[in-house]
Image (tube, rainbow, N blue to C red; front, side, top):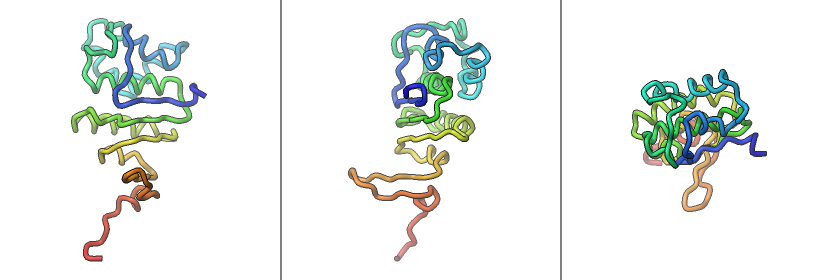
Length: 158
């Protein structure tokens, strides 16, 4: 079951060890080609060259040496490496600024095509990825349906 589900939380869990080690936890037997491919689609490749040692850059527990966006990208790469059938994202972009959030959403828009993705968000940018939206208000379902229908503004004065 775990191999079929990829999960990325708001505060991703990174472990002490190299960036390579952290990503390969998603699929320990991955080839170098698979590793390079997932880092490209998740944006990890954009910052690897800036870090001494690249893939071999050592992280402390939780990867405190990296920005939140970098940690999120590594966590997404790890989740996608095993090619899950289901991707669960919990408040993935909540700790990101608008620019980093837009870049993450654009990357996710590409890599989640054809992949069942369920995400929790309080921010509108992620809704670009949704086909259907479930709105929960005070623990109750307030709306559910196709994104454009659920997000359609109510007519004024009705």
